[in-house]
Amino acid sequence: MTRILIIDNHPLIREGLKRLLDGHATLQVVGEAGDGYGALHRLMAGPVDLAIVDICLPGLSDVELISRLRAQRPGLRVLVLSLHGHVAIAQRALCAGANGYLTKDMAPDLILASIEKVAEGGRALSPLLAEALAFESLQQRRGQDALSAREQEVLEGLANGESLGAIAVRLGISHKTVSTHKANLMTKMGFNSMADLFRYAIAQGLCLAEVQG
Image 1 (cartoon, rainbow, N blue to C red):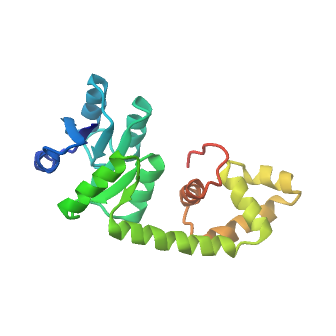
Image 2 (spheres, one colour; image 1 turned 90 degrees about the vertical axis):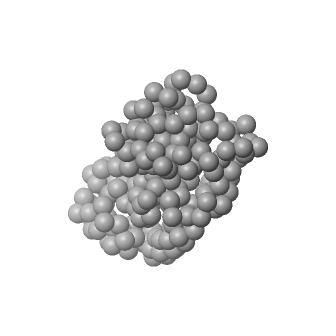
């Protein structure tokens, strides 16, 4: 039996999820919380296998909440259920450790199927988000394919937290040349910030060490 904690500041959403899961053969709601701190407190009160989380909550929310939930209960699976279907928000949640991201406008049967999938160890995304993320990944992969060998080396160095100066010394080129390579690869990859670069690097397995962007 998968024990579920529902974390949402709207009582109607919590009640709706409980009704959706009521009587399920392998899913059981064991608790609920209306804010991030309440969720962490409830997590200490008893075993929980899966947290269904709205990332816009009073107090702790978004990446910080997901990270603290996972840190407090390392084996916990986290499924985001949010009003927001923006790709950047979903990427942020997934990089923080969420196992899935759903939007509240999805049909109840699809939400239930996604909860079952995540409970069984899989991942789940809302159909529109999955399409958008796949398209963005394709565009970025094309961008990486267009990088020169030097630009690829600079990308990997940046992804692993190296400074421009350190990359210049390692590659035996000038600081100015590294800066030029960085500007070119940011343009080719469509990155607007280093945070974009780190998210991409994490998703592609380019990070050899944990980097905070």
